[in-house]
Structures are given as structure tokens and as C-alpha cells.
Amino acid sequence: MRHVYFATFLIVVLAVSALGFRGDRFKHPPLELFPDMDHQAHLKPQAESAFFTDGRADRPLPPNVVAASLPLDAEDGLFRGKATDNSWLKTIPVAVDAKLLARGQDRYGIYCAPCHGALGDGNGITKQYGMSTTPSYLDERRLGLTAGEIFNVITNGSTQNKNMLPYADKLSPEDRWAVVAYVRALQRAQRGSPADVPAANRKELGL
Ligand code: HEC
Image 1 (cartoon, protein in one colour):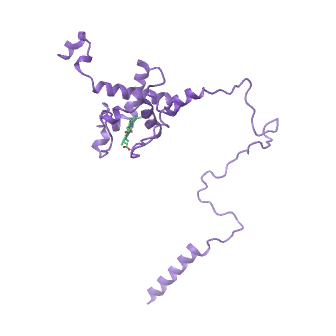
Image 2 (cartoon, rainbow, N blue to C red; image 1 turned 135 degrees about the vertical axis):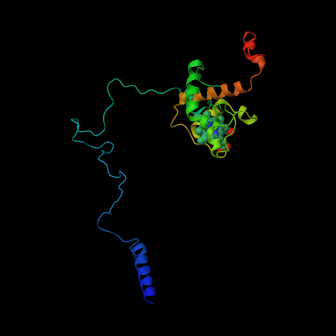
Image 3 (tube, helix red, strand yellow; image 1 turned 90 degrees about the horizontal axis):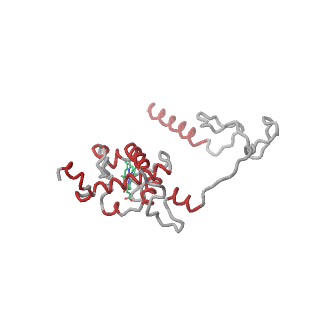
């Protein structure tokens, strides 16, 4: 019987301490065990500050600063992979040369190959650890993706089943286009035929 009294007592104490004081007003600020940088020394916009000789908290722009922005079309293409009519860009809006491809290969090896595989066939190392949903770039649908769509997948993650995270925080827009160019190179390479090899080099392949 003693146990029953004790258990009842404990339940009452717990219930009152958890629920009893809800909604009460306190005069003192609550105890903050984890302040999470809530309180920081900062100045409000357009406030005064004794710290600067001119007494203003806002700092003026340094001399000769000019506000600059790219024309909207270029920004759309470069940063969203879209044309001004909101359609996906079919081609890569930066110059594709050996340097860009080398950069794309480098970034691809770091950020994409673990899942999509060095060949782009979806057989990266993560497949061996159970991640079976990574697609190949070589099926009909992915071959049909426009450059802008691939750029968008890298920027915002997969729009399909949401199984791929965005990489915008790891790859600058320029790097993303470099990776798009490299994905295109992989798609081309995997669908090559002996006819693509220049006659002079066919012997090396034993053709
Ligand atoms: C952690 C594993 C992983 C990494 C790393 C990864 N992906 Fe993916 N990717 C996926 C998965 C899974 C899907 C399928 C998405 C879905 O269906 O939701 C996918 C889909 C895609 C698609 C096809 C989208 C479509 O519409 O079908 C493209 C293109 C792609 N990834 C490119 C990349 C590129 C480029 C990188 C490197 C910047 C990359 N991925 C990195 C897992 C990954």
C-alpha cells in the first residue's frame, strides 16, 4: 500500500511541475540554459553609435563604390539555368573548354561520383552500402535532360522523389556548369562507338 501512496504522490508532483505553471507570468526573465547566441552586441539599422566619430551606426560605402549587377538575362541563365521566358537552358551558358571540363571532372569526382559512379552509370560506392535509388545518366529520360535541368538538380536537389540533396552550398554556379559539362561528357563517352575513334587511333584499340 505504501508504494501506491508514494506513486500517487510522485505522479501528482510530476503533473503539477510539468503542467501546473503553464501560462503563468513571471517577473524575472526565464533561466536560459542554452542561450544559442540569442543576445549579441549589435547595433540596430539607422541607430546611433558612440563608437564611430560621425555618431552613426550605419557605415557609409567606401569611396568610389559602384553598385553593379549583371543584366537579368545573364543572371537567369547563369544562376537559375533558365532563359528569360522561364524555359530551361538547352546549352551551357559559359564557354566549355578543356579547363572547364577538367574542373568539372575534379568536382564531379568529389561530389557526385560517390553515388552516380565515375562513369555516371549510377554505380557509385554508396550502392554497395544500400543506396539503391541513384539513377544512371544514360537512360532515356536523363539523356533527355536539358543543361538547365541538370544545373537545377545540382542547385536545388532532385525534384523527383527528393532523394538527392542540393549542392549549391558546395559548388559555385561556375562549378555547377563545369559539372554539367562533365556529365554531358560522361553521357557522350558511354554512348561512343568505334566510328567515333579517328582512323589513325583505331589500331591502338585493336579495331
Ligand atoms: C548521396 C548520393 C548522391 C550524390 C552525392 C549525388 N546524387 Fe544525383 N541523384 C541521387 C539520387 C538518389 C537521385 C534520384 C533522385 C530522385 O529520384 O529523387 C539523383 C538524381 C540525379 C539526376 C537526375 C535527376 C532527374 O531529374 O532524374 C541528376 C542529373 C543528378 N542526380 C546529378 C548529380 C550531380 C551532378 C551530382 C554532383 C554534384 C550528384 N547528382 C550527386 C543521388 C546522389
